[in-house]
Length: 303
Ligand code: MG
Image (cartoon, rainbow, N blue to C red):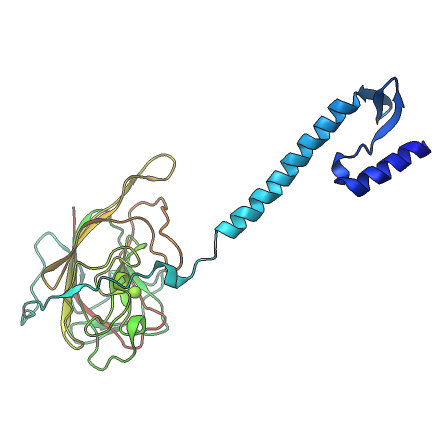
């Protein structure tokens, strides 16, 4: 037994402990005998070593794979998904209509200038955004608002205005957004002489698609989005059978042409495919918002 003990100690010093025969009992007729509860099993030294080496390779390979994958997946930052070039060409849109154009007869009017009865806070509470004469304004610190009604495919009209006294730069200048079905953001921003990453400027599908051109009106003037949206359908495994698609006109100018949305809007990282049904129209109260952005004349036609 003293010989066995010496053998184990030397083996542990030279090799990994888990390839050393720590559980054998005696050597007899060239075979290793192992204590297994109250009985003994035997193996040849060759087959025993083969088994131990195989285990060693599996365990070492497992930890090497974990280490490698940790090194190859760097932590993503917001900057990694920003695109700065090419800068969308500026197109001066036609003059805004003098008066509000009424909604078509079959439209659901989401805001007619008088009340927010079609809207709620995402937690179900009454929204605290402020109604003025014919429009409403974001109230900082009170969160987003969204429609009570849920939608799938639709045509939507919405007018928005960055206040003339807006301050800040880049994403901190007049940031809001329209989250379609509560998860895909069509960006609202002051993009009139306000450089930022192009897949985050006004009219972008945020972090996915820059607008084809920049048709922004200056702060203090009303902008118009007309949106045509086709909701996704899903396979049984939760991936897209048909992805969501969007076409957008900004002040009458085409800026998104049947764009295939890749997934959820993510500030950090890549879009995710998340199964969902009909969803609300959600308006963003952005954390860095420094001006009470205005909205008016919002209607939607289900398709
Ligand atoms: Mg936004």
